[in-house]
Image 1 (cartoon, rainbow, N blue to C red):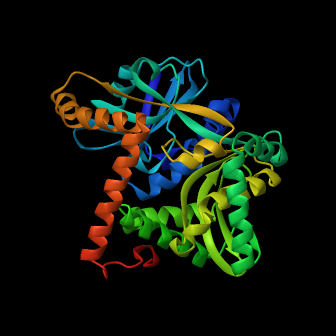
Image 2: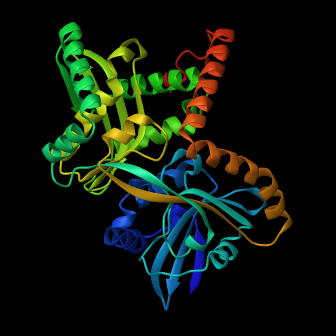
Image 3: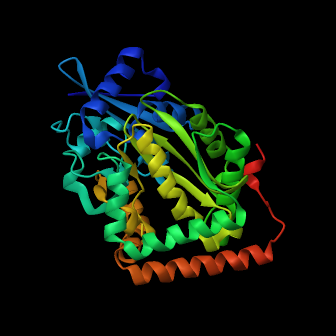
Amino acid sequence: MKVTVIRPGELGEPELARWRELQIASPSLDNPFLSVEFTLALGRLRPYVRVAVIEDQGKVVGYLPFERHAFGIGKPLGSWLTTCHGLIAAPDLDVPARHLLRACGLSVFDFDHMVAGQRTWSPHESAVRPVPLMDLTAGYDAYIEYVRANSPKNYKTIRYKERKLAREHGVVHLEYGATDPAAMRLLTGWKSDQYRRTGRVDRFAQPWIVELLEEMHAADSPAFAGVLTMLYAGDTPVAGHFGLRTHNTLVGWFPAYDPEFARYSPGIMHHLHMAEQAASHGLGQVDMGKGGREYKGWLKNGTIHVSEGRVARPSATAAVHWMGRTPVNKARSIVVDRPSLYRLADRVLKGFGRVRTSLHPAVEKEPSGAR
């Protein structure tokens, strides 16, 4: 096999068409973060993005979008910003991972949201995690009946809160595919506030991420689009979400809500309305992303799997990287696998966020609004 490494912008029309052909032929690749449109967008914004083009007997058989950082450190495309990585190829393609790393000029490659079971990466998987889905293939009515039957108390509670929200603030309704840039700024402002409250890094403080969302918000084709949804009570926006979709799958990315309405659980309410609209627009599933949020457990009616792991070629860089990363990864796995530890870690981060906000109450009130 021949492997050629290029920048995304160097892909020609035949290569773009082949990428889309390979993706749509494999259900496991039905994720917008694996779409060539997402790779092209990141390639325009980040100088370290590359694509490995894999050929066999003169025919392109696969693509690997990745990031090549200093000292041969490789990361999946989008790294911590995205929720799915993978080799865009037929399921039976078997390219040894170390051979691929050598061709890409990489010493080490860490992954934590890889499509599980791909032949290239499966020998190097250290853990496989479930990703909860809202499966809408039988229609929204069938989905909601499943939720009602399997989580009757939770479902009854959220519908009670919705009626209460409607009585007190106006009819609850969802705008699907909102195009107003002001709605996007409102959503990212909520999300920035959430990051600070919970002690996490504000992703929207980085201008390139804001620019990426703007570009994705404008994308709209049958096979790939950005989807902004906003939940209203009367004329008041209370929750929203921005994600990406393929022809069949909407992937959760940036959900947020106005904390003044937190007592109504608007985020969960929004998910139910979003699923209804997704089904009405012909989508078959909503991917909620792996993670320990309890609400995902009762909203889901299906799962897929992603894997974590590490590939390294013998080198001083790989050894130093292992010493720096492996203890952190092991600690994270221990926390994720134990709900009580996850909740404790979440409380600690929120406490840190409250302290940081109290010390700097006027700093960057809404950084995402500064375009």
